Length: 210
Image 1 (cartoon, one colour):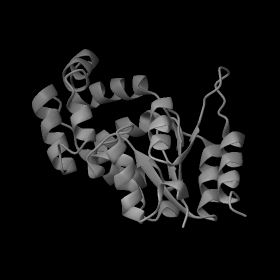
Image 2: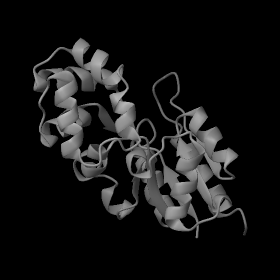
Image 3: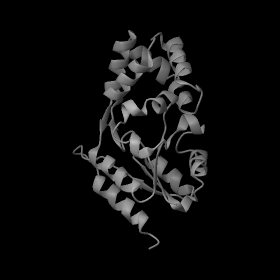
Image 4: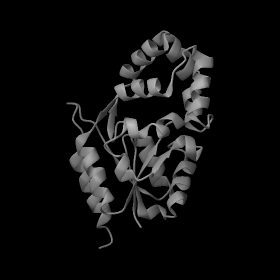
């Protein structure tokens, strides 16, 4: 069995934190500076991404305690979705990969992201079929070695039978150090994405032993 792991942000969906932060501030009734300087600069989002909060409710309670902003999950989703734009060619490539093997997300994100995938990623949630691995569940963030080994373990697949598509050079190198194949997905200076290269890498991986 081959497994095709895809990062989410800046790989399947373009992501702009500078669109998310103002929306969070508006919905939460606190300043952007307070949110950025307390939650993000304070390391709380990073902690959430490695499983500090086991449920969306725990995450939102901690967010309120740290920032003063009380959000519902629906408001959190609204702000998150405002920062995400589908990359059509990448989503098409994921669908192609699903016809060649097993596809899965492998994303550095907290529990509310996983719980919100039907809202945030309607273009891919059905084809993933529940293969929605996030760092908060695996207890480690890319490019830590253990996130890759744990992800491989979920599918019972050897490293050489898995490939990662990711916009981060560090994450790609981390996967390769574990024996996986990996493809560095890039956004060009003109704002376009190398989705043709992604598709070529998918088919090259699928045909490597034929």
